[in-house]
Length: 383
Ligand code: GMT
Image (cartoon, rainbow, N blue to C red):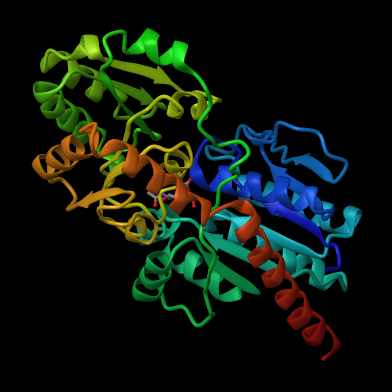
């Protein structure tokens, strides 16, 4: 396959879309493609050196007149300069807002200078299901998805929602999220398990950005019910607006001594390596990358059945799904998995399912898709 010179635009944070974009870029660079990240900060997972990886920081200067600094304009200007100076073949933007519209603007500026660069937009979830639907963004989101040369979504459910809520004429290609099984694998961390669960308690883990959509209070309430039945500990990884409420609830329920809030962690896989169960009761979840990370570390998952989760979870095999908010059902299912007669089978099945989403299976889907878009673009250019 011909190597490609790609510009990747994403949020450089711990969030799922930024993680997927960064891991995709790293994987492509390892396969010989040149990858240029265009972001306002070094992406948190861009942690290794490769001669094919480049980072271009979007600088945006404020001015007393601007109550809201125009980041989108600075991003579009940066895209123009990187496409020209680095001779990019393609721009791949992750999360529609505001990346797809900034890319449209950059494309038009470049076109006026005789340079044609196709744009691929990947929809990740809340850019469609929550934020994008808001009337203050919807027209721009619809327009910029329709103007993209290629559009991908991380699950069939997200594709369906996009067609339902926006007037989209473009085809949407489903390319699921993926995992690097070299990084996310069960490691020997017995000393860590003994330190957290000195009396052989079951260890339950939740990771998220603690936004309302993650329903972290359901995590604490489910754990409370489990804890009434069996000795157990809960580790809460991540940070966000609901963290204080979750901590308060744990105290009110008098389980604070068995619930630990660890904040944002770099090496989540080390904690997952000693976990017995992962809880993801989200209100919405386009894919559920955090659940896949858990499964790769041999941790079964009890989740809601929202969004794309049924495309990842196999009911009764990798774990269980319950209706959003059904804490009693999530409790019953968690206790069933944690039964020592059942746990080994669930752990093995979780790993087996995660292997289907290995980066080596999913990366070629992106490469083929880029080739298709580039071929279509070269036809457009010559017309
Ligand atoms: O979950 C979040 O709030 C973060 C969000 C993001 O855009 O960073 O995650 C979304 O994208 C991930 C990667 O594609 C998906 O695995 C998550 O399911 C999705 N989150 C939601 O749909 C709520």
